[in-house]
Image (tube, rainbow, N blue to C red; front, side):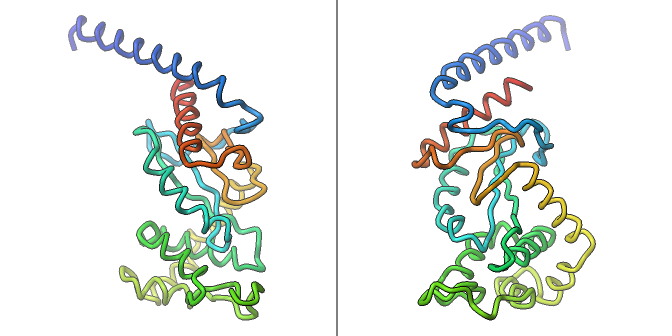
Length: 233
């Protein structure tokens, strides 16, 4: 690389950095730390590839609020900056509604490469009144006495293709899935999450849902936090 090219690239990088700082400063007055988002005292490592800022949704398939939030998540995902990536972190703290089972199922599906394409369908299988994996009786609004099993979930994924029920059950009992369940629980705890759904940007900015309502607000705030993180890097 010639000296002139290096100088030009350096000047371009400085210019981009200056523009980024101006954008962050302009948004800082609108989005207030401690009100719209909370900066965690101990940031958590990112799972996103180099150069990407991770936007994590902490959720559970067994969470009705997460089911209702799915439309919002799709809009947020579509509105993410080019250097941001949406990931999912499944919580497990509510065993009465089969959250540990669904966490195991999600991580198993991820390991087998069938999680993303079945993400919405999994929610529907649980929260549709006639869903094969329903945990709540929609007529009485009470928890069903018979909760889904890993075999039920395996049949659901097998019916949608890409894996057999036997493969799914076997993978669900693997050491790697067990390890990832423990890692997920540790990450949820480190994020200081008190409810689902919760969004965390760059492993350190936890968004306060109570201060936001429209998808445009989430997209704007997340965009600001991504630029803030990119500037810090």
